[in-house]
Length: 333
Ligand SMILES: [Zn+2]
Image 1 (tube, rainbow, N blue to C red):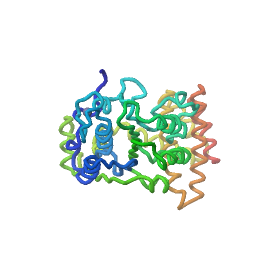
Image 2 (image 1 turned 60 degrees about the vertical axis):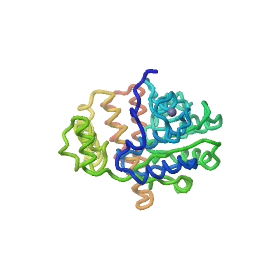
Image 3 (image 1 turned 120 degrees about the horizontal axis):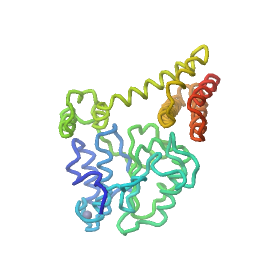
Image 4 (image 1 turned 135 degrees about the vertical axis):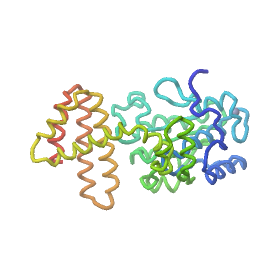
């Protein structure tokens, strides 16, 4: 079959410390009353994704085992991702949605999804697919990673399917920031809550991977955070770039902008840093919408400028020139 199973031997009882969430799901499966739209809420890296894939596996199992047999071809393909991009499940009825997962041209779009799951992805991958029902018969399952990144347009397109779901079609929206979802999405999805993992479980996960367990407490209950702490370098680089950009915007002249431009010569690195910066500005703006309308407007204008800079970088403009021109415009935004 090829490809590595995403989670080998994935069963509900392998998911650690999420007793109430797992009980909710196994009870629904046992009674044959699986809700058509769940919202898995909780911090990153606590088992939401494992539970979502376990549910998908149970729903598509060709042996019809209540919790999935974890052995048939359908079960295995449900949790095995393609070897090549887009890295989506091999089972055609387990459909993954995530910002930037699909190349824009395959969605009939020209824009990269730099800051949100766009309406093109929802139209092409969800709406277009849902109409045909399950390919292999049992169920069609859409798994939406970081559902809080849906743009308003995308959320509204999704809403139409959530309101009148085709038979045997299920959705799992995963999010660590449910307050960022539209009220209409919240009211049409059933919350299943996942809590932070206890420190001893985090230590166990780190130990299994041969990593130092001393940082377990810093991870605040998130296995993925605990693993990322190991990659402190990437985080530092991201934070340092944002800090120097913000300082350059406030500076009396363009000298700091010129310094940033000459420090980053590599196009791909600058692209990554600017995309992260755009994401950070966008999240900041969304957080301020209700409390500080002016700050939210400034963030929206800054975000649009960074997007333009990314486009000119993609159109082969010189990295140093892109940074200088961007800072000059952000100072006026
Ligand atoms: Zn099976």
